[in-house]
Image 1 (tube, rainbow, N blue to C red):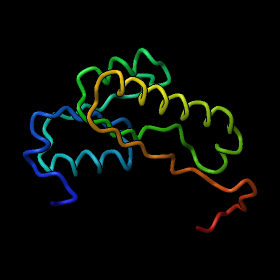
Image 2 (cartoon, rainbow, N blue to C red):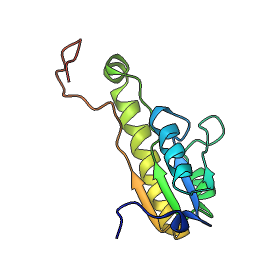
Image 3 (cartoon, rainbow, N blue to C red):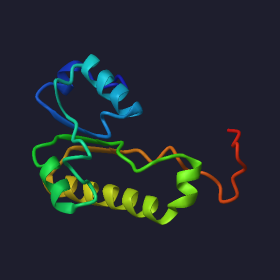
Image 4 (tube, rainbow, N blue to C red):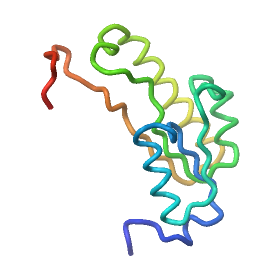
Length: 128
């Protein structure tokens, strides 16, 4: 059995990709399309605040698969200036989406953590 679902698996499935217009998300959406997914929903933050549980209920309503990539990020300086806001926003988006997906009967949920996770005492510039 292949680790990547076949095109037939993706047919007739609504795939919700939060953060689907971002750097990683746009590539995930392209990869999904290349693998046969033709019904992909990409909610935008300007119209869908995923920190709001009601919004998460709305966007997951008919979804079969949720790929959660959306995050409030901004780099080391932004992380240092707003650590509480970033933690809260990302926690609420993930928790609300997971709960809404479970209630909606979503078949698969993939959650990706933020790319901006650094040690407490991070030197600037940071070498990875």
